[in-house]
Image (tube, rainbow, N blue to C red; front, side):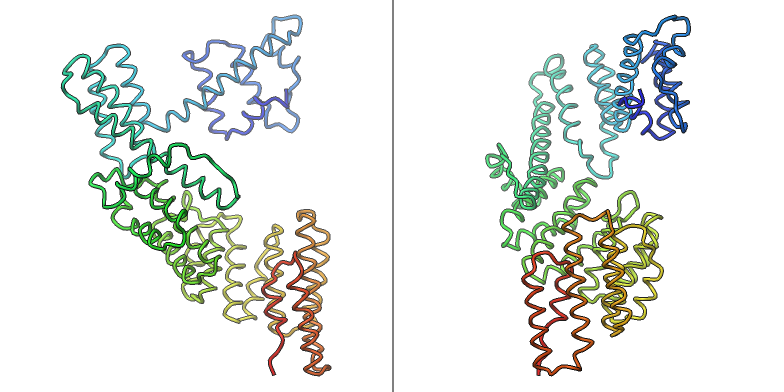
Length: 486
């Protein structure tokens, strides 16, 4: 039983949810089978023990104490019943997180029972809840469509067939729901196609794009149409990447329109705008590095780069790296300090000190780099590798050849022994270290050679680095192995 999916699923639950699941199983509305509750109680009592009791015959005896013989099928039936209850618990737990959906189902149930007065009263309550939303929920149009479908057909069948307003709104909200979902998913899948060289059939997209384009020409009279405009503009930035006007149209939505997007749509707007800048930068358009930097600032101010109040260490690093590339050192140091507390506690100090060392390196304050790296703990391979790279380049800048050659050797041994690197990664790092050692030796012994001989050897090294197909930190090697001018 220890290997059963049921046991694994229950063990994965936090303690609070385990107790909530037990309360669910206790409820006679959902379960009136006592052995099922007793099975759950046994699992909850033993599941976290060093040696939990998962023996099937032992468990059977606990839940059927009066049975003389073990019955495999009977135990299987109890487990199956508990598994169904677990699945239902998950569904209801999710349902309770969406109160508007619960209100909609109340309308539908009242309609099925011909309790139309209740349906109309609850529909008014639902309208007030819609009005109180700070931004449109992701399922807003879906809920409005179903609400107007219920009210519209009630009106047509029992009140006034000539009143077309409810059913017209039903059709309008259905269109909005479809268009937003269609465009949003097509945007994400188009991005996937560009990144992963995949292909998708977008079905009716080309048929609806003319109508969408017409809506996107001017500011929508209905603010609920802003998500349609936004996703259409995102799609245009990807389809016509060379036309920067589409990007300008997209970022214009950070103004007044931003408040009419829900949190998911706001993050999509920010993410797609950033990705456009990154793609343009990778194509050599350096002006978009500055544009991306301004977007990062905007995203921080709007809270779009935090997830539940947390900034990921990778986002933290990306912002700091870009700030250094643009030589925005003062702002970058302030950012590192300001958002240090927003990192996960177990990543906080390492991420802060490693990125601060990067700032110091770019400011050519190499002694400060060394001091900052002393505070980085090698908790994982990423921090170990990044710290060693910074340390190596700092020793090189300080012309501390003895420390540098010692580091290269210990770095090489670490790479060779690491079990957390693939063979390809290991080869890329060993190639780098081999070239770095050769570079250091040439620079250190350069005074013993003529300028002509040194330049020839540097050129040979430069060419080898260029021709090697698996070298990390290649740019630094190429920069430092350039032939010196006379």
